[in-house]
Image (cartoon, rainbow, N blue to C red; front, side, top):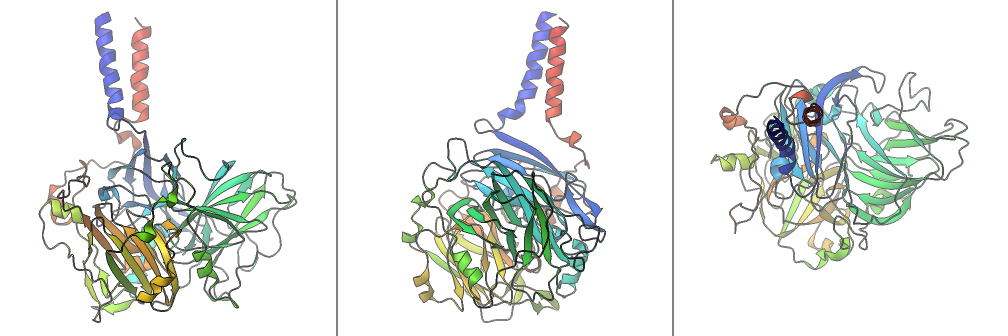
Length: 591
């Protein structure tokens, strides 16, 4: 009987430890995201929002450099879903990127597991649903990659962390907003700005009705907090400020910045920043936290202001009086651009590795290719309103590009995206950039639209080397910052201006280059970079995962999945392991 007990225990232990063997070496972080909807009233009007694990916004995913990450996504919505990880770089593994060119969507009432490694990266990012305009109704949350313990951060360890998600908001849900765009209409002025999913504090009885739930952030006096701020909105550029407090900029989208104080800061759609906040003010009152619309007619956009409260734990009174004023650009039209130019790389700080960030001498590398990408206001193409880059409005793929390649499907996409604007009638097409592996490319984003356009590149960080008003020319290179330009994954392009970025193409895969303005992205303002290592015929790229989903012309290959919306269906969860070990304990104690 003793031999039986020993054999049984050995068998159970092997089962329990099996899941840890899959990712030996670097630690594994596992989590579940249950994506569903509920009805709330952030601006006083009941509406459907997308929640993650019942929360709006969703919970923080907190990992460390080199961690293997397992995220089981349960789609409890009534339509397909994909989650993408804005700024999180998957090395040679675009299969986990979570956009339509890399993943088939997760069908309604199905679950799918993302598995990737956060390698050579630190910083502040966020996740969100990438399809069907769903981000307009929520589904987003912070994603943090921490330094390894052996890598010092370039400032004193903060006393705490605060996550702030700001964004413009409409009282119509994403399906109604989607219908508006499908009908060729503009979305119009947002109904407000949310801070952490909540409406504004009633700082004005006329502009803010009674009964609005606002965000309150409680801090202790004499401390320093790291606040990570993300603009998760549709398209509105927001000015962020905290009454009577400075914002000490330290990091943006994975790179430490030259440290500098700002009284207010412009954060554009899709961008993320870290600031240090010193709670060094008098605690006689609380203080306003404000996120207000930029570059707009203030009289028409008065309601489009998010207001939260910074509450000192020993505060003797609430907030009162007028909001801290927004930037005054009347006499300085270039203030926001100058602020953007002031964001520089901290070349003496370590990032994910021990060496300083500035050791990569990007300014002395020869440019192999230049892409001049021009965007204009949406136009009618074949009777529908579309947005385009270089006259091409991107057609959403029916099947991911690498999946099509692996299954010998032809005609799914074209490798003929023009490297410069074409003097021709805009077309709807599925054209992507045939980029050269290990090339060092220059991408110039020319904005001939009337509003700020924001662009994001998956799988990479890029150096923002220049921006200015007017049309870019080769002479514009004389103004490039070739020493300490900030490296990031999202950048703004001011109306009537250009922004130049440099990218080292060392990450094979299919990577999405898109407008972070959700309306422009939905209407086709995107493309992909297809990057293959020709010497190894794709062997350096991670292969299709075992749980790959099939869709479009390959849908016939998809095996049936039992619909599930419960974490009980996850394999080898922590509760199951606990049960196994309790069983072992019972066996031993009963002997």
